[in-house]
Amino acid sequence: MKHRSGRAWMRVAAAVALSASAACGDLATAPAPDGDRLAGVDVSHWQGAIDWNRAAGDGVSFAFIKATEGGDYVDPAFAANWAGAAAAGIPRGAYHFYRPQTDAAAQAQHFLRTVQLRAGDLPPVLDVEVTDGRPAAEIAAGVRTWLQTVERATGRRPIVYTRASFWTGQMGGGFGAYPLWVAHYGAAQPSIPADWSRWAFWQHSDAGRVAGITGDVDLNWFAGSWADLQAFIQTGAFSHAP
Image (tube, one colour):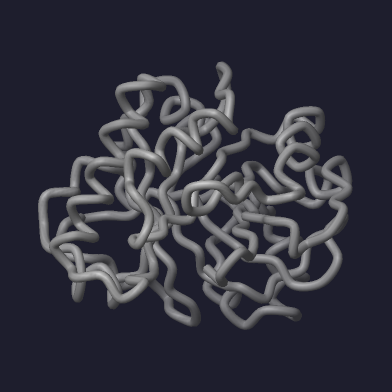
């Protein structure tokens, strides 16, 4: 995920996958249209104004929306995107870009002040992808503080977004109970950190095209059917093996 950029997951039928593959080579590995995966988008203010109804019509089944970063930054498009996705009937999730140089508890409270979850929303997400020059042990402790604080406050177990190469070098173990959203482009299957045996979400491209969104947008898979996604939203449990 790019710094202060968007993320994306969309549910695609075969025709949508084929048209998207013309813009993004990653989608050459799209599954057959048998409901084994859902596709979606992740976004921020970098995508500009989004027509969420058009995005829904183009197969977007869920969206992750940047909410906050560090201790005080709020993405300027968060409120519009948060409301727009809901109005279009797209399950939405909010993510926080973690800044290791800022107090983790303060970051968690900043996110909680900004995002009001409601029934039908995806769990909160912590985006972990930079060190800010801080030592690995300090980063791991701060990440754990954020995750535990947000889980206690919301009753929802957060999702962790990361790359295998970053996580393996910085984080150690002990986080495998959290659902994994992994970034890996141009692969038939993503590499995942040793903490996890499977991924729940996979950001497989940062150069997709979706109706209603101007320019490139991140593309993501959910490793399951629509029913699996609804069960995940309701219970926070992820049991579908990709």
